[in-house]
Picture 1 (cartoon, rainbow, N blue to C red):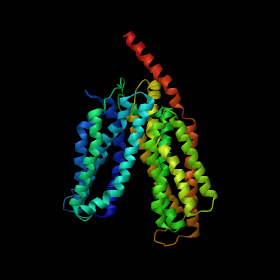
Picture 2: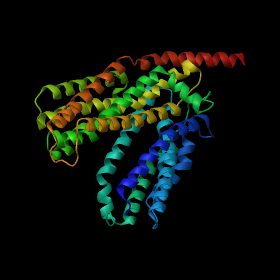
Picture 3: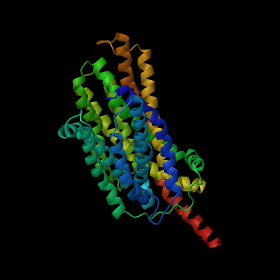
Picture 4: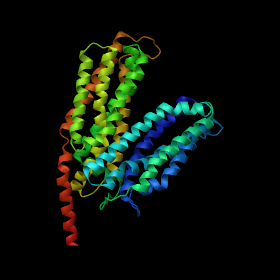
Length: 411
């Protein structure tokens, strides 16, 4: 059995490569095409190798610690940094290659987010019971069998995409290289705004899953509340992701995220003003979770809306690179928030060895947990107020078509 700290260090170090690989995968998908398009061939060719690679991660051989660490580093990066990133980016970008219709594309992207969140929730719930069913946590074969089950299940939606989805949108002028693709993202003002939506939603998710542990343990002194708190905070997002696509013909994505950000601000103000109790904790978590659900569910769809503006502005249609750049930014943002909170804990004198923290430490954690999400919600509210690309997209698409028609006539 390897030291958990060593394994954690390998994974943390691998995140550096993981971020870079997102961008490379997006560039490859945008600039390479075969007979069936840009994304479908990637899924068809690499989905099964991806599943096989994750099985390799759990086939750690007997040997020295150095040998096993090297094995984990190589196999983990083969799976997560290379194959999972490549296939995942193709699946995430697929809607932008299927249709130019904003509503249809948004519905596909929202359903993608919903199934991703639902899959993560199910895996987190049943993984350990399944391992125990196959023989227990101490048995390597039990982990391998469990991963195989999830891998086979995960192949089903990918296979459905290959069988029934057809790419119809051609990327006539893809970015020449990764640098050009990134530049197209950087000069796209709406991409930055959509990116902020994604980043703020991930910040709230980090608060719910990480910062809350310190608040419940040190401030309220009751870790038994954790399960209910996380359920109230996160489950509304899964539900809203399921129903939000059906609201798109009546409400814009901007309107839904605007409503969600207002919910988050109201929830956090109530949490700050009203004396803390388990009822207030859960009620405000539920309202904040509803707000976060709209932001999280719409984040990918809003990135999709920035594609047409980017092509209108630069003359280059960047699709997968925009999604990959947003993914990298979200990972960096989560890491930055985690690091900032770590520094904050040190600054207020947190000591994990103490059963009861000092009064100043408790006060500091209480303030961070209350006012941090409020700042995030206000930033989200201001950002989404100015994100009007959805209503302007029809004009951008019309002008792009007119340009292409003029160019074709000149040829």
